[in-house]
Image (cartoon, rainbow, N blue to C red; front, side, top):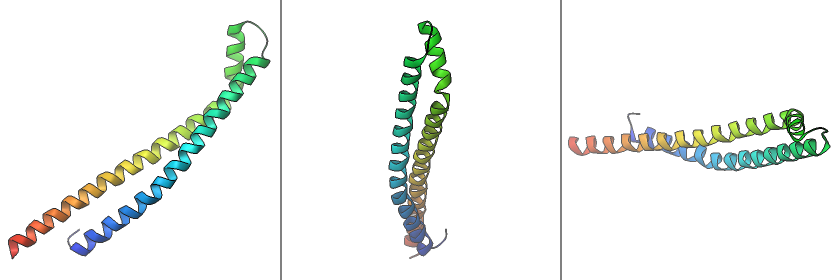
Length: 111
């Protein structure tokens, strides 16, 4: 970015994307909570319905709830990806702000 206009446009773009990211983060967090809740329910129901020793029942319940666990893990990965994207936006904003300060200093020197 070489001009003040480009810097302002980039900061504005980052701000808009970050604002959207907050809503996306909330949605991802809700999906994660739902998926973890579904996993816990599936695990406990499978344990209650299983036969055998406690160790056998635990193993059977984990196997039967494996798909729910996978869904919870994928929801966690999505949530973490959204958090990472928001962090990247924050870093990009700081970078553009630094460029802005450097441009401001350059303009002061040229005057």
